[in-house]
Length: 178
Image (cartoon, rainbow, N blue to C red):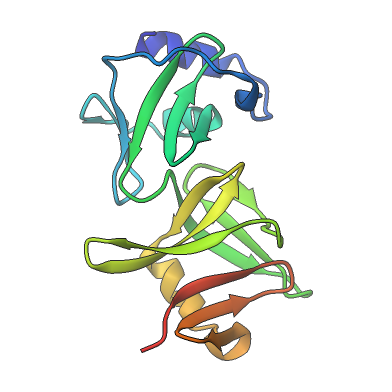
């Protein structure tokens, strides 16, 4: 599938996420998508600079095991991620102490107790990642991470050697205690 065909297919979808969980096409070789440690998308080693394209591609993203793919009903393309596909760029806490995360791909979500979080190592750093949707993960922009760390006194709890933030709708690991 060419880059133009992928764009045309995604552009013809409605505002909801397409049912990628129902699609199991054959893997296409030759095209290479990757998402770097800053959340920047690349196609065949060239940055995809148009935010609209990145957002459109994120709508047909599927996770199988530990791997990510862009899928259509007829083709599947591998996506390599340095950390995770989504980058969390902002958050809000409402009066009921629920948290709403906002991502770089024009998607906001309120996690609940069914969402997972974990700590990963990347280039000698420990990075918290959380589930965004359907097993697809996101990582925190550095300024969001520090803003969350500032909330430790209000929402934090040490659980053994792990520091956790606890909101009304979600608990997640922010890092390790030293």
